[in-house]
Length: 150
Image (tube, helix red, strand yellow):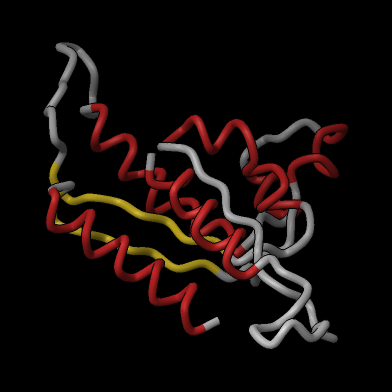
């Protein structure tokens, strides 16, 4: 799993309270890396990303599915649904959700405080053509370089 590898790489490498010379640092170190595929992540930690502390977020998606699955009678294929979420989540983090928008959607008044959130939350989208050994190598190189230069 890529998220587990990135966790190990970044948090072990940059989570130390001393520098290369063994001297204690006087600044915040490292970040917390976590991830899950698709809607699993949405249900497990997007509440924090939308309404909790600001956490810069990376979204990784692929234009083509490895296994195209379209259930007869469904409007969208599984991949298309996942990609809709891939594009919608960064928009939601950037734009937030206002009381006015929720009222227009008919949200019950008692739920308004639980569904509104500010935007202006940073995110990056990495959209690759297809999940292959090559694109996996590109992702590994990107995150390894990020870790090295931090």
